[in-house]
Image (tube, rainbow, N blue to C red; front, side):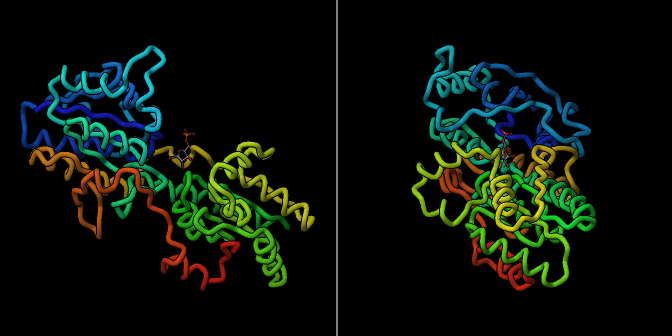
Length: 356
Ligand code: F6P
């Protein structure tokens, strides 16, 4: 059997562990397995840049962060726009697949990557997708790999702020990644005991945020910690049409939403506010135990789907079981935090503010 493998989009901690799971399983059943590792995501498939790899190239990867194949972003919305040197991307990818006589392409990535995988499926290629992203926003799987490792890092970042915050009479904002969704902020915020959690799914009212800070002061607390999602949005902005909203954000004088919030809190209350942005640290380092186990299981289930010649699926985790989910059912859908879910209600019951 000949399989191709690529990692696309932003990296995360457990990509290597997932590839190891796929290869170990396939090699266990097929001693003639040939693996082509495409370099730097879809770019490797477009330009025919790959390495022939052996089973042992995937040994020792369970704990290694990043991706041994490299990655890059090839935006789905530009998939039908030729490359700078005039290549038709989809045609080029199909040509590489055909030239190498691949039986299947294993694609590890997030939402955009999944859309391209689905496009390749529509074009007649055999594909299997594995759901990667620290954002946890892939529809059809309970969890994505990278998410739990990133929670640990974001939680520890807020923990560090906690001790310095407790020594000063200040407001601290920690900005957490997550793109358009609030999963990572919600989990890290709870894990680290943030006092205010702002996520895109629950637009905030600045006056309510300030009220939460005041309430803590009245309760004798000297400091307040806000976990703010990079995609957090005010109630006023949320009301605007998407295009107008995007323009206002792009034209903002602040580098990100946290600085905007910090400035406004400072102006309205006179309190000192500090912003910390852990940024790409959240995708770095080795995968945590949960992700290692998740990836090993998803990788094994992907290997089994390939051996069964059951292609065109994302390998998901649903209710603790691995599941083959047709790509056509999930590609292009986003999994967001439901503001009415029990977790949000429990957090509200604790007295933590969502600023709404
Ligand atoms: O999708 C993962 C992610 O880390 C998001 O949380 C974040 O918005 C984005 O990627 C950052 O992208 P880049 O690595 O291209 O700066």
